[in-house]
Length: 226
Image 1 (cartoon, rainbow, N blue to C red):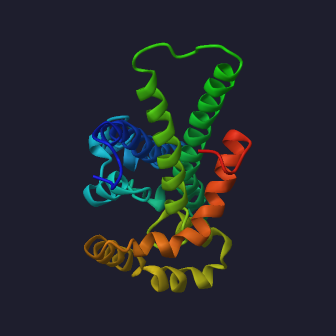
Image 2 (image 1 turned 90 degrees about the vertical axis):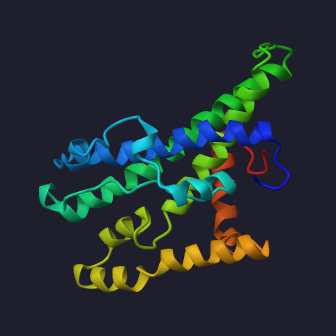
């Protein structure tokens, strides 16, 4: 369990994680199908069932922090009308779905606090605290998931997005140069867990914090909210 987090908070994180990961992968699958590739649909990935999308290590990372991933959606580029462009669009669909989810949660939180500020009580239910916690975690988790997957490192979504902007002659070299990124990330996670130093977070924070500021500003009108 994350240090300083109560059991209630940890439990509320679970549905937020499942929803964020599931919609992320479903968005990839739906985009691929829309662009002409039925591979993900044929393999049962065009679904809201979270079980078929979960990756064990990626889910554990989300349970213990803000960064993580799900099982990659299979895509056959030979089925796409414009493979390079369409792979970029398919890749964008996942992080974009997380950004949209985060902003929607932020707007709802903002609305709840606005009503409370003027004397309204929009959430009198005894479950109100858990609903707010869910929205809070869903905002943070979706923002973190979008950020991590947009990193231009193979095989994250960001690598396929950046590849679209590169001349064809540089794409293979770029992919080869970043293919060891994930093993290095795994290593940093393991080292950080055993040494309690959070090395990966320290490396990514200089670019993660500005990203989160923009997300908070877009959702709440204040980059220092939450």
